[in-house]
Length: 533
Image (cartoon, rainbow, N blue to C red; front, side, top):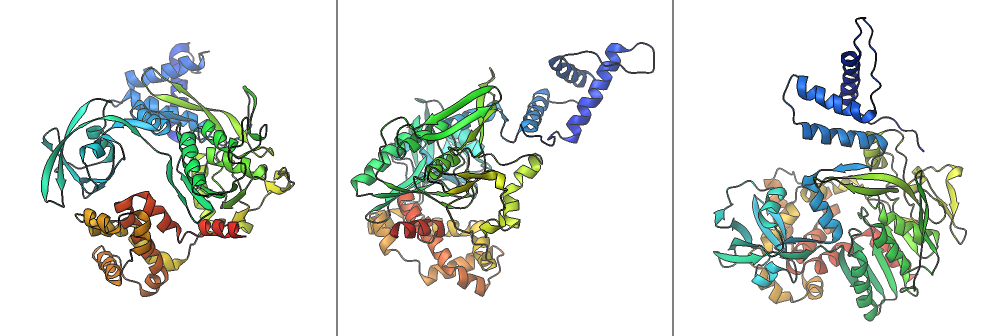
């Protein structure tokens, strides 16, 4: 068990100490000047503190907010990943992990306080009723919402609802410069965890997984079957920025690549028996060469997959050291629909490496870890990472790997931190490339879709012109971003790629977006090159 610095805030510690002193004084006052603590059990002490605050505190307080804030303080004192989930957030989190929710079925974005439909979800109620990309939702149930300040929470409240219920939407469609009304019956909307699956060339497939949800493995089976039918012999699984999710989804995926009885992961906890999860069925993709892409935001279930593949010498891991989240949580739901996720064990890779990075220095330091990786050059040079000899482990084939938190890739690809990207970073960070791409096709989507007809045709034939780039520079200037010729010329190709990708997404969704974006992605290109060897 690790010894950790306390995560309690000074205010909470002071509150507990002062309250304990006064409780002891009130309950045990014996006429002397000394204090004596009552032999209260821990639960009674907490209840007495809350009662004292409620009865005697100088200001009116919201007891529920106080309790909920205190719960997370207590849980953070244990480890960074034990958390309390308020009832107001619980359903959204559950919907995401279960892979569905009840709603109208649109991808949207708030632009200038307007709800803009980016894409209706294929097969969903909005798509069936004729809602199109670019439509503005300007009214709900006959009420004009254009004068409201929109937030994601407000949009969810307006559009989500129980399956079978209806909502009347007023839509402004720029292509006809007119308003339309649609009555939409809400339905179960799938939330896909695979963003894209496509053939990079005649033999290499690519799959991008954004999370491990209840539906991930079924999606993975469907997508890999499609790619195999198109000639896939090698596969790149992109787990970059994938923060994890369900353990079973990750181990099922590993099952497809590992021989029967091969260890995938094991867990150990003080009050939990050691549990070893092994491959336990036919190796569905045993003849497919494999590469896994990871980065510093790949965590939990993503690290289980990467660790299992690496330790069993089943494929190459390419990218940068993963996040280092290897704690097992169990969820306890309360009657008010809130919940606690409590850490009960740790994950270990087949070779015995603990995936979890250290949190001995406290919660704030743990949260700053990724920023520290930038400052100590770890994301640029792998030699800046130093491992103790005690952290040495070996794969089944005898290859040296290291523990200590996260998964170190077999092939390191540095992040590009060149200051010459400053102009690109400013205009991209302010959302100006996206804004220009949206305005470029707004009201003209049908024209461009008819012109290019498919994502593949768009990727091959659409070119970003110098005139479009000049418009980007002008837009940046109007938004206070000073033109830097050297930085612009250095990052010109990245600007063009990002602009084409966003326009492609607006017309053909991820089928155009990812192949265009990946054309300049160094980690992806390194993986393709390794397969060519």
